[in-house]
Image (cartoon, rainbow, N blue to C red):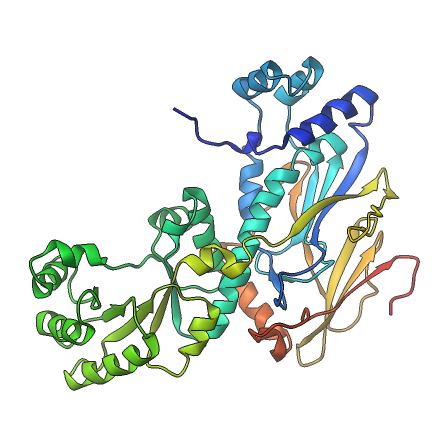
Length: 433
């Protein structure tokens, strides 16, 4: 039996190689600053969404190397004895600052800053990137779907298309982005996300005929259930559903076919049967473009699965974790196409008097000169290894909603375009602009 993964072993071999060498040469305790940022957004995207930071803070509390971990690393030759002893005592004692969950980001935005000794900070690279790259990718895709839905409710239904833990994280990120429900009960339990779902085609096929299946579901769930009507013939399925449940059935779901045409015909049929308040839910490989294409149709709710849990074509946010400061000294990487800007950075977003965001100013080893309409973007997550009180998931969800309101309208387009907000990076001893 393979034991379940634990945060401590979400560590790359090369991270421990660096720790071992730094412990040996005496550089392990140098005070360092690492930053998480992206050099570019996924092709065609106009903004990114910070997600997963609260999950990361929770995982950090469990980031320990127990006896079995240390024995494995020692026995396999990954670390030497001094490093094994150091790992057995490991506790992160540094600070973490970053953009709020639900905040928008752009190329060059310093969305997370980790400071402490080199050894304790470098060990967090894999854990940090595995959480933020996944959750931020899902949240950005989900936010685009929410925009495309134009106020209609979305249900996250992608658990069968993801790793079991990734599925729970994806449900959380989708809810953060504005989805109304998830079908994932583990996510509902863990994060108190509202859950929703209905029977699959298998339940209809189990019974001798469709009316019998519907009658069984209504008997168990009541008329507030949703009946899946496309197992055989959709029009007959709707007639059977209303005949069994009556005109006050809550909803029917369509999972296949030309959804635009079927939604129109289904609405007309439901209305003719007196089911004026019965909602229409559609699902079946929906992404933001398919949802937008249904904007004019009589659809009340969308179910999104594969596209949302895979980032709708961008399964990673492309975030990197780079060393930018050592003992107060700015350090940079000059590799072609991968150069970094040295120094710890402070960021603020500028707005017009109307509230529309215009620019993000990032200052290395200093702070932006305050101007009317500025909003500081970083908050403290961890101090001396101890977590700070964080906003609730509901509060972070509202924060993202407000952020999306604040960007220029073209930033919400689904068509390919440049990042919505320009990021200006300057050094404290250089003038802005």
